[in-house]
Length: 72
Image (cartoon, rainbow, N blue to C red; front, side, top):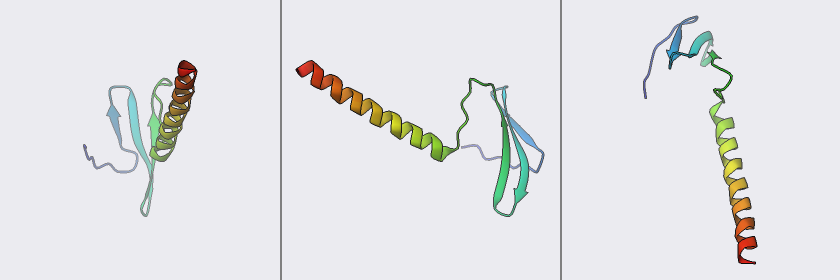
């Protein structure tokens, strides 16, 4: 993991087309802004994990149904 220090209104660039800017710092919270192309999904980690779990459950359910259909 790369750790960088930034102050308010400073930014970092990722892959030439994603910009992360520090918008506000209040106590132990940091507000960031993300500028990225529309085709680049940006999620909070907890939301991303929920999406991944839901996708795994859907695949497992579909896989079991396909197996039942195959076996008759």
